[in-house]
Length: 257
Image (cartoon, rainbow, N blue to C red):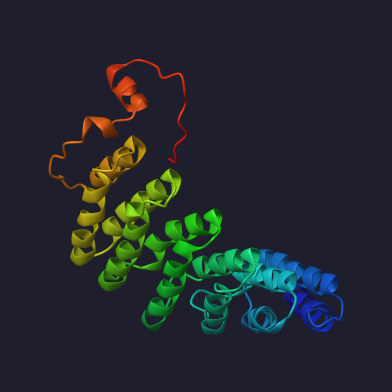
């Protein structure tokens, strides 16, 4: 009891005012310290509210990112203000601010039903982010974000399918998209499951064997049988032929697991 009161007094009288300090480094240090303390001593609605205000209004990108990082431990699940601020921050010009905003949204799951649409829209938008790390983060977050909602699942599969089938996508991004499609389909309802068949089937015809193999794995995860697909010989990668025949290719191919 006394320790908790001392903690609250420390936060209120010392750390919280430093979030408004004129020096950006002090504001960053204050935000990070509050975040670390809430990891140990528990979440706090009051401190989360203050951190959300800093994340929304501070004009220093590094301070915004630090406040968002602290929000992941200070805010309770489904916190309305933190969710609203993170959704907005996910569109920010700073890569680190966008990344931390996604981390906040993931930390706040589960959301209230009326929050799912805005959060889903924010996460789906980041699937086309200019930063590959954020794109992967967004794709991996989608299965949890839909929270079993069938309509949300269909929307997520549509966004992921566009990445999986886009010729401009890297092999790694296509594989990540297919893995997420399989997870979304497994967690979603019947409409979600049905919508996942088309993008997975399309990727079974991809010219890259890595993408085709990822599509096969996705079909297995979804526990569905895909129609037989005849792959044109020209599309069969030499490493794929060697691997099937048991020979060892001289070049190694990295893949996402």
